[in-house]
Length: 394
Image 1 (cartoon, one colour):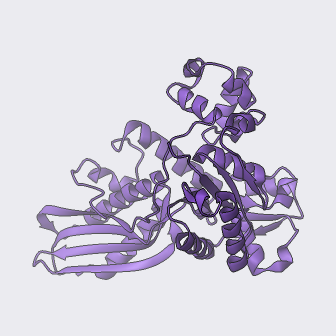
Image 2 (tube, one colour; image 1 turned 90 degrees about the vertical axis):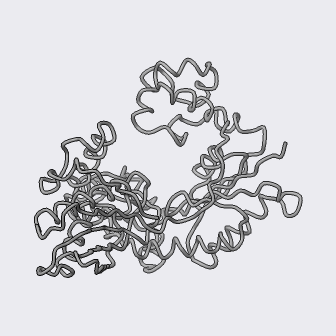
Image 3 (cartoon, one colour; image 1 turned 90 degrees about the horizontal axis):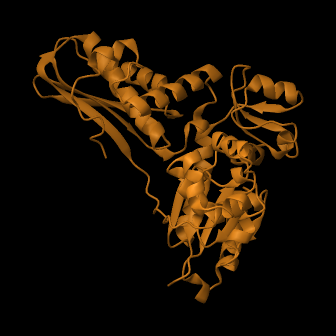
């Protein structure tokens, strides 16, 4: 059976690195990216800022208290997307199979290349090429699977590289704290700590079934990862181009309140779909078909987002420009396009901590109880039970 060679590449403090690339005066200083008001949150920070205890998702007000001389910078998702796409193009030109897992992370499958180049040497050369052509620092880990490669990258940072050879996976993972395993978040880490499990070795030394009472079905998955076992494949990179939904009415209508309510419901659906797939959009399109079957569309670019309120505002604006009050409407549709990968953390530069918390709570409730849950905007409430396919797009 062929041995796998998987590389995980991660741009170091990506948002901070982009800011420094465009302003060298920021080099060596504590940089904090995110909402610049006291009600905002930290999206990313430099290693110099981390020494003061600053972390991602921390309220900006607390970050200012911890690091009063820190330099706060409003994020620029358009610039981040530009540099991310540049790195993606370099990887695509040089790599037979790769996965873009986020705006600043990549998995590369180099299996079988050892006989020609040597995977570690090849990865080092690619890293140098990326740094030379973009000016951005990047680290990588190389191992036999995605989990170990990602953990290796974390240990190599900043600005480093680490090769974990076949057969050394368990030994490498054993002394690390459990939260360095990719699937272990803050909550899971606390659960493990409460029962005396702090280091990965403690998981390696117990049977997989011992974790099930604590973590349910995720217990066995965590045990496998802690033992360096991960068979998940590289998913070939392909950006989704768009998501769309539309509705044809049984009876043509000129009820503007009804039409805008449906647009709001559509925007909420598409926004939640974006967040569930860790994607953001930069283009909104509204479609109208009149009773005489004439069809018109209008689109507009926006800053990358997955926020309901931003997409709703743009959809209403486009509808007002399109709508001819003299004609009845037969169909209305909404599309979001120019999608890129990136969780909600990359578009919170304008949002307050309260707004971010609201979206997180709404998503948790709807994920648990479904779309019929009552957590919706009032204008869209009357249309939540209507039957239409919210994702008939590409």
